Length: 113
Length: 112
Image 1 (cartoon, helix red, strand yellow):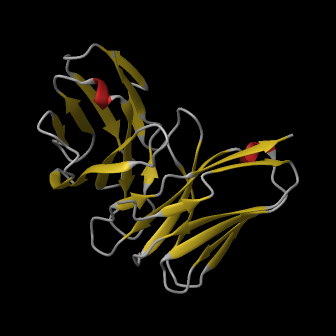
Image 2 (spheres, each protein chain N blue to C red):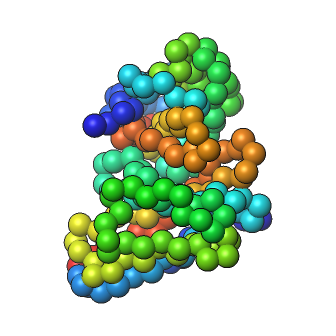
């Protein structure tokens, strides 16, 4: 297993367009998290999945954001009608069922122009 | 409200010097993680501490969790240019979701 994988690594989009990011967690990890990190800040929690169930969403996750994990494996994060304020690093992390560490992917850097 | 305060925010030192960075909170955490992040990359886990008063060593890095599990420190001995990066602390509260709350980080630059 090569760790948490995110795709794409970089995305430049025009304001108003929709974008979708993918995260492949570590294979035996049933818990998956999305975080957002802006310049000069630490990552901020967006949402959490246990298997395919989305169990928690942050107030940061506006109606334009939606996340899915249909088969309890990979996850997607979609942003509709992107705004310049959506420009950030979007990080995915996963954790196993037993006590274990939260491990992050390399992130997707989104730039909205 | 930033639940985890990290200090200093920026630190620039010469190779070979020692340094300590701090992570403080008024809240109790069930565990605390330290990550290092390089530009354009995701955070890489360095250590997890779970017991109040716990000390963990990772080569030249020493991590301590406060007795009350509200604060932590990271000490680096004989810093090297490869230690350059953003050091983030993150706390987890109790509960099954293990959601992490991050500080803003300490940006360390080690000059050769």
